[in-house]
Image (cartoon, rainbow, N blue to C red; front, top):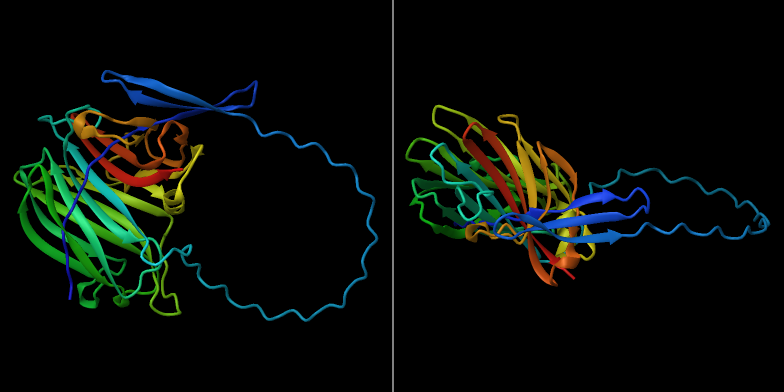
Length: 360
């Protein structure tokens, strides 16, 4: 038995700069907030340099202990493939991928505050600990300013991706897009059909447009499958990778544009972060159209003209650590949004990753 359902959500945010004070050795982190007209500095946090420990007095030399008799060296055994950090049974995380498009006729992009471009969301909830047996993955698909298209496919697959062995589930649908929630549901995955070890679960919400263009939001997420005592296969488990894809009829295939975050950094933030949170992020594309730039935001609401607090930004592709000053945030749940974008003439394409975290 299989089951599939649909759901998507949208959100955007903003980023901090970090600098080293050459005289004091302090680190200063700034963040910017949108005031309705422009970004203004929200705050500056100073991290003092680490104190240099005083040398301890020299201890007199100890009397050497007698040399013990050597013991036989045991035969080496192969180290097992590492599994995930143990998590309580049933722990999950909800991650969202968005794909944005702004063509020559306008429609805006996320930077056009209050006038977002045509876009779709796909949100899924996956296990953070080992997955075994039957796993139900809730999903939601949304659309905004994107009513010329039709949702045609909801899909899940792992690295093998074959319907013949149960590692691919395709639900072909025919749902005209509307402004808001388009579909919700559950994808029922029998993990016993998969190889054990780290697997990449790829989810797709695919849209066909009346002009022949195609669009997809794709959360690509590592999950550890454990139904036996043997790991059969491992994949790259480092990143949670929301992906956006757009192809113009008779024109450009914009490629798979990624706005990702290091998996272990995000999972650690579910228990709460404080001070300066420094997750590692990745903005990339698979070689179709170069990445033009990126930005990172906290608690944005672009649908209502609020980009939140921008904590980092840059040009081109990027892989590295950013700084999020959590001291200016209230305790509780927040959202980190990563944007990556491409530009060709008057056409613009963006992928967005939306990730939950908690401030202590």
